[in-house]
Length: 242
Picture: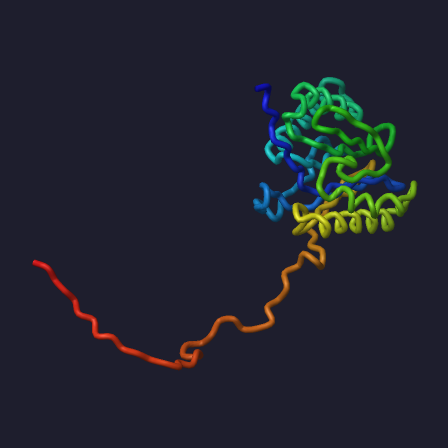
């Protein structure tokens, strides 16, 4: 009979990262789904690793939370033992070794981004442990359901050493493209600006196509507002059995 393969899981999300002249930008939508059910409309998909290194996650929510906590604690222990700030390659190596060990059964697909001694960086890590480095990426090119639409905006418009205003506008347009084209992404988006001297996060920004449309009519009818066309009365007899 052979071995039955586990069912494929869709990593429904949109995560984006790109470099700019002062650092790196990362962003993600906020919709968490279970199949066709929206489980959480405002899920934070940006994970703290160190003060200058953060990660965006696509995949299984529980695995992402645990993997983020594992990376954060190991990097903090490394900083305490060495007396130096953790570097991006260290976060990448810990993530790769952990995920490769579980052969993809830990459903964590990550974009690890930040600024270290060597400057800004972005790494993509697959759940099986493979990785690559690029100046821009959306869902690691393969990870989330909104990646193709987001990449369609990033690839023709990205330039090296972009100013913050242009890079932020490109990030927002890429996120909104992924959210609009994918039913598993949406509701709002969160983005973070990571520089050498600090970190700034803007949470749960709602794009126009996700905003709730105000009601055009008054749907609560007052009493006796409905006209009675026909009325018929019935005599009801109560039967009591002793």
